[in-house]
Amino acid sequence: MKTQYELISIGSGSSGRKVAVSLKQAGWDVALVEGRVEDHFGGTCINTGCIPTKALAEIAHKGGSFEQAKEHMKKIVERIRSGTLRRVEQKIGVPVIRGFAKFIDPHTIVVNGTEYVAKYFVIATGSEPAIPPIKGLQGVDYMVSEDIFKLEKVPERLLIIGAGRIGLELGQTFHDFGSDVTIFEGMNQVLPGEDKEMAESIKEHLISEGIKIFTGRFVDEVRKVQNEDGSTEFEVILKDGPYAGSYRGDSLLVATGRKPRIKDLGLENAKVTVERGAIKVNKFLQTTQPHIFAIGDVIGNPMFTNWAGYQAEHLIKNLLKSKDNPEKWEPLKMPSIPRITFTYPELASVGLTEEEAREKYGDDVVVFKFYNKWLGKSMIVNDWTGFLKGIGVKGSNEIIGAHLWGVRTGSIIQMLVLARDYGLGWKELSEMVYGHPVLAEGIESLSKNMIQKLGLKDY
Ligand SMILES: Cc1cc2nc3c(=O)[nH]c(=O)nc-3n(C[C@H](O)[C@H](O)[C@H](O)COP(=O)(O)OP(=O)(O)OC[C@H]3O[C@@H](n4cnc5c(N)ncnc54)[C@H](O)[C@@H]3O)c2cc1C
Image 1 (cartoon, rainbow, N blue to C red):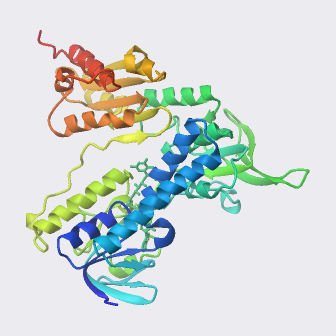
Image 2: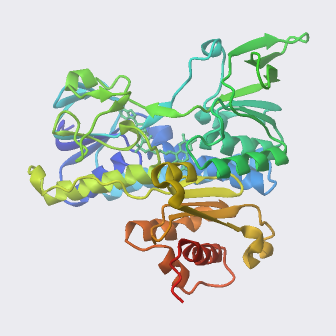
Image 3: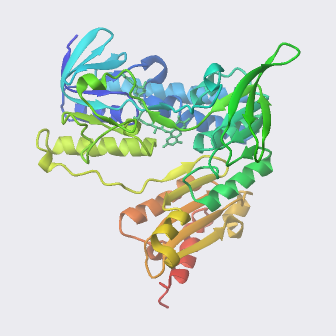
């Protein structure tokens, strides 16, 4: 087998795979390395992230059983994974090197004992769960998100540490399957970093469905205890203060965020610098070795599949413009990234939170909330939970932030993303003709109210 390539991409996820495929199509001599071809080709999103979690949630929300949901999920995941491998390897003709890559020097990796040399490398190895240093946690058999797909049956009492996107989505999914779910969050709100009012509303909504959520309390200790009948249970302990007590469950999920996957990559041999746990890159996505690029989750937050793919496309464009002359390259600019929490209903956000906007613009901040119960389509679909929140600055057309909580809002946030990135604003959104009756009409009403409140209505 040939062991020398022009470029080797490490990791077959949304970012690494894209680079290998596009450059191969452009005539480059590339190879793709993936450590887990059999069960993880295509990366986290396809196999253990976005797709399977949403597939389970969809069936759970519609009242289906865990078995039906797993069947649905397996079919989708296997179809996408095998189709992706077939396309990459057979149709496009990218050689897929099976095994985990480790740098032994800046131009050589070793995979299963074979050395591969390349002029350029792309590190796209993704992320892995970040486990907090909670007393006792290391000694118990807790689950991380990937483990829930292997569950044989629905946990009776599921304890979840972490109320970020993954904790809330899986918490609601298993609650829908019948688990008694308790979620612990150390920060003062669920979805830390998201708009506080939206997060608070979602928390209240989930509590009203029967999920127990404790915020503002870091877990002090985790134990495995034995019952009188010999069975064992997990025990989460909150020492004194609000909600102090011991909480028991038959399963424990740790969903406290993710960290770049850099372990055993031999970065020290490649002389690639790591900063605050992530691979350090410049505005061209070059590491401290100019011929080694890094993209996707491995360079740190935000960790979204769309952002990983965007970085890949940016790198591809630069490399196709010029292989060797960075002067011809464009620096990576931060686009508007839609952040979607796939609870039912969804929270889709873009831009600043109200707290961030007030910090930056003070009293000039303008906020309007449009309640979904005012919308015909919400009544038709028989779910008018939630509201849409617009954030602007007095006298300006700019969409500073938008937070849409309601049925399938993840599909309509894109209008606001487009507007923000292409110089449009509340005014243009308010002047379009919308289909009727559709959920996107909520944006029409939100923007019409926003221009009035912003003082932009000139008639
Ligand atoms: C439960 C969950 C739900 C999520 N839901 C969403 C969502 O709804 N929307 C969204 O946008 N994002 C979501 N994400 C995040 C999303 O999955 C990631 O942002 C995305 O997959 C990152 O892509 P990537 O290319 O950086 O890495 P990955 O997709 O993680 O791919 C990296 C690949 O590299 C391989 N690898 C690692 N080390 C080596 C090595 N040394 N040699 C060879 N191969 C190696 C891995 O096996 C893996 O296949 C979710 C994540 C999780 C965990």
